[in-house]
Amino acid sequence: MNLFSLRRNPPSLDDLFVDPTQASWGDNLSSECLMPSVERPKHIFVRGQGSWLWDSDDRAYLDFSQGSGANSLGHSPSVLVNAITAQAHSLINPGFGVHNRGMLNLAERLCASTGSDQAYLLNSGSEACEAAIKLARKWGQRHRGGASRIIVASKGCHGRSPGVISTPDFHHVPFNDLRALHAAVDAQTVAIMLEPIQSYAGVIPATEHYLKGVERLCRELGILLIFDEVQTGMGRCGTLLAEQSYGVRADIIALGKGLGGGVPLAALLARGKACCFDVGEMMGTHHGNALMTAAGLAVFDSVQDKGFLDHVKDTGQHLREGLERLSNRYGHGELRGQGLLWGLTLSEDSSDAVVKAALYEGLLLDTPQPDCLRFTPALTVSKANIDEMLLRLARAFSRVRTAQLQCRKGIAV
Image (cartoon, rainbow, N blue to C red; front, side, top):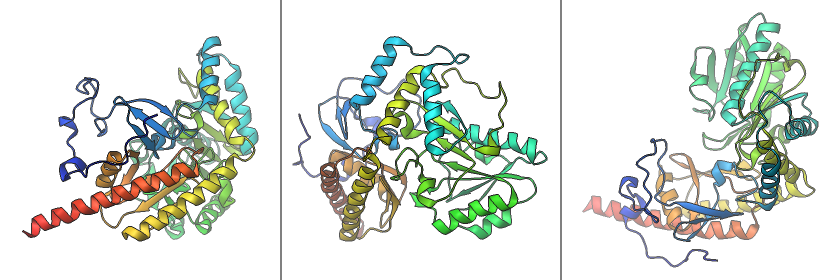
């Protein structure tokens, strides 16, 4: 197994800021026919196992992004591969208009484990959040005189469906600000929607005082509380749902990302009075199909296995301590997060450069903000993997610092 040479020549500034349009491809493939979406490095990845990915040149990379947390059990875990393979041999998609065992089993397991009354299975976190909004407004029509306004508490951005939550029926207020939230609620408000940890904003956790205050406000006014747990659910924060670590309870929850372990799968959970959809109000060709739900059940069984969440908490603490040491050594800023979801604020807007330098060192990271790195490793990550990541990240920090010093000297000359 080629674990990617640790001794590499120092890159020039051009190496850290490579132009993807000038990149060469290891196996003569081109991206010209792809519609533009996000900037991608030149590498073509061909296989993965656990916390490692290999490219078409057989170089290994330590993956601490895992598809922004979607690969909750890592790359190609045997439990997921076996479940998908077995299911594909018997039934893939019987059609949206009929039941299948996986659909019924996963819905029942989700409800039983989260204290929910109903579940609906979808393809993505964005769909789950859109469905949560639709459900809240249906409840507003039925129980709150047609109220449809939703207050979104966010730190400058929200990861799910920005087009949907920018319409006039949405009102944005600052995150972790109870006073702003109280001032925004009116007779037309049907729900308050937020992420317990604002992942795309740079991994900004809600304070316990704030989240309990939001829950209390919703109960006093008789409006719904919606949690977007697409990023934080399914064990990512050391509990099955992030709400459990805060001791609060939402009326509607959107799940995604890690639920399918890398397979497109999401869920909408509803409790009590929020269960008000009628037949025909939710439809989707692939919603709850047998192949996707088999993957979800495999992930769910793993996360619920004895000791799994304790492992997440233990390795999360190990990761936190290591990142704190690196932050202090290189003069970076605040470390925020929980479980195996962490964001590190950098001393300046250099996250793109650090991510590119880390890639050069055989390490994959996310940058949700120009001054922030995000760490979402597999929930099965080992302490040895974390220690190796810290070594590679330290080299990436050193490379960027050297490049910055060279650039400043050039400007001074």
